Length: 400
Image (cartoon, rainbow, N blue to C red; front, side, top):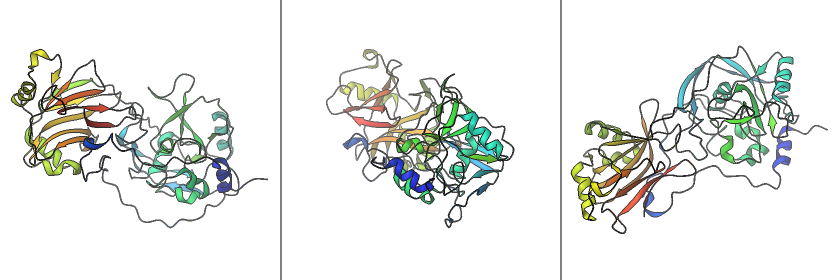
């Protein structure tokens, strides 16, 4: 007996709690600015007409129009892998058609699993179709939005299992990667997978963490693998000759001189920091010396380099962060910003000295690639902290 798609998924997750979507809070107290969200602000979204959900029909395909997809994920998103996920790089994708549900694309049948990639390709071929590329899969998942999930930001694995329609993508594709990892025709690029695990899969199974189901999440499997967590769906039309962007390896630290007016303009575009922009002034050499001198130190006694203007920091492969410090709006400020491919910036983390326009020294050293130190009085208790690149690939500005 073949089980309906929704019931099959419900049985797969029975007895297993879902992982709620969302992010963890910073490490308490001074790491967050009161009244400001921790997550980076979203890039502008393309508003699409509101859809009315239609139940899936056997054999139904969705026509995906030619258009752009913002490949990858927003820096700072929980679960993101900056070494293999692009920073929302805009890529134009030709038109194609995709099955609305995983193979056999029939709401009355359970998704087909336990097939290696070659067998999945052969089953698509038999229907006059082909395996989707990973870029097509992501385009079908996101449309022209920068949404993180194959539905909306309230994604929940168990809910999707019971009601595939609750996981409809902006373009009308259902249950993308909610029943199983889905094979694609794409092979791994640098940093993702290996010679053995050379096939790219998208989505994840109901037993995997919620962040593995993100539209931008990329996974690698051995193409010969055949297991219950591996499924697929088919596409129709010429396969696009597009390659996934390769993430660059940047210099770990680079000092950058940026005009103060330009820094004010940048801060004005970041909602979390806008109120400090109008009279923002970068930390000066004199200000650094003052912060060190208050603790009885000089530059000569500390073997680290100090921030003046902007520090471009790469705490991990594929990740770049601008770190700025100074005063503005009657406060002292340390801020970490993500530079985006379109020239905009998003908030990564910040520490605000409310009503205290103090001088702050921010220091770095190649021997400490995932952490910067800051202080308003070097080595004075309660007046120092760090800018930390955490294990979950997010940034926190903390007091120590």
